Length: 489
Ligand code: UD1
Ligand code: MG
Image (tube, rainbow, N blue to C red; front, side, top):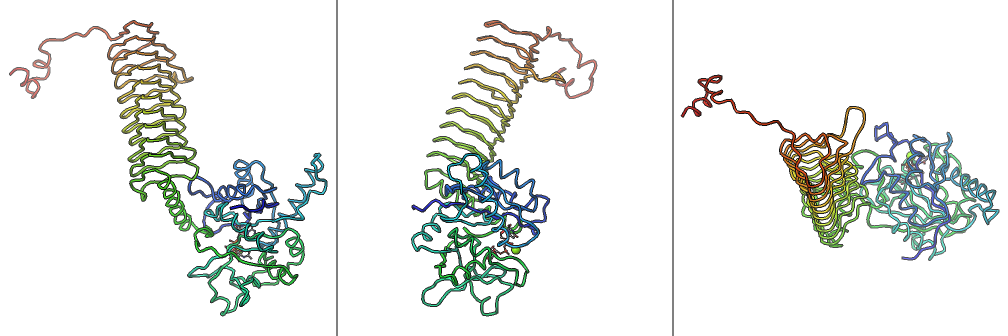
């Protein structure tokens, strides 16, 4: 789909979101790995507009900080005490002019700079499934019909609360939008609703914004009034109706947040399945929108992939695994694991019951096995930490085996220290590596060794004292117990 790049996208995010009943501003609630605002900004930026403006008021500091994080180029507009979506767009246009002037003063090429021509997209910040493709269709329809305004609409079963679309009989052109509270019974019977997503011709928008009033049931400045004004001025006002209402559904409470979150996830999984990913149980598999999967990946039930997680070709993840910002190499297996900010090499094996903390890097064909925790640890190609161990702040070379129940004792109560273990080493079970300490290439250590001093390459390190057996102790000290009886027999 080709569509003209808009001059600006205005994202409305000043509303309070009372029904969330939350200390967190509504647009900062999350689904699919992004905030509501993050989804809106992603779609907005996908149109490659001249500028993106976010209108803010409630929870301003938090919303601004987050939006800057997501998209540092965003311009902010502060809505004042005057309520309504029309007021929101008025302040957005003023902020756009100020940004253009600032850019011109900075030596920008265009000294006028203000948005006086081209398309201006307006969208709400709380409509998470609205994507750049849908906005692109709206822009394409707007350009194709040379419209003054194009509004995205949909039909719903229960239109209560929404603005209704008034169409001219015959042409189907839009006469205007009437808000639920201002509508007659006859108008309330209309099921085609305003999604709050529009493309405006910039000049039409500017001209109409100057003529809005608060003459309505809510005493607000309605953006929706722009449509009737634009038509009265002789412009074409049309609607693009989507038959997929979920695309334009806003979040008002946490029930909708969960419902739309599940729907988004269902769509994300379907897309991946069509790309060649096996999802055994979509109902219990959650994949954030920014996750990347390759062909012949298998996701087993109970898998959650978050953030910037990447799973390479042929890898299997799950069951019951949660990975955040983890890279899983091709052909690797990750079973019943909780991990974040870790890299798992090609054909490596992790779990069951592993905990990979940030900075874990497991080499090709390496193993982090059962009941093993790792942190800030590089474990080389073919090296194994199979059982019941903690490996933190450590470097392990290649083809080394760490015995069961071993711990890198990395913390002296004040500072963290590193353990370095070479390649082709064989450390015994139940070893404590008291860092900072180094075990050389090809070294061995005995079972139960507390490694307090470096073990040179090729040496055997042992620290346990000689074993002493006290003959007949159980018969004397535990007479009458089953153990004593068994010993006597
Ligand atoms: C608006 C539309 C209505 C449409 C509905 C879709 C108007 C007058 N009405 O209703 O036709 O069917 O959206 O959900 O536009 N916002 C601001 N500043 C404000 C008010 C709202 O930035 O002063 C933002 C909100 O944060 C939200 C969006 O605008 O992101 C929509 O506001 P909301 O109150 O949900 O919609 P309504 O005004 O009720
Ligand atoms: Mg409102």
